[in-house]
Image (cartoon, rainbow, N blue to C red):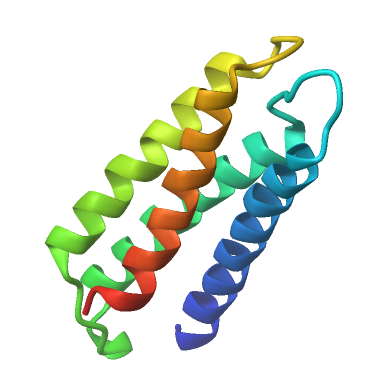
Length: 118
C-alpha cells in the first residue's frame, strides 16, 4: 500500500507543477492573463490527490502516517478556493490582475503551509 500512497503523492506533485507552471506562463502574458487549462487541471489534480492521500493516511494503519487535521483543513480550504476561482474564470478572455495574483499567492501559501507547518 505504501507504493500506492507514493504514486498518489507523485501525482500530487504533478498537479502542483501544472498549477504553478500555468501561473508562471501567465506572468509574462501580453494582452491579459487568463486561467489556462494547466491551472485548472493542476488545481483539480491537487484537490483529488490531496483528499486521496489524507484518506489513505487516516484509514490505513500500515502506512503509519500522522495526519494533522488542522493543517489539512487549512490546505483543503485554500485548494477549494483556488479550484473554484479557476473553474469560474476558465472561459474569460482576461482576468483581473488582483485575481491572478490572488491565485498565485494562494498557491504559494499552500506550498509554504505544506513544508513548514508540522
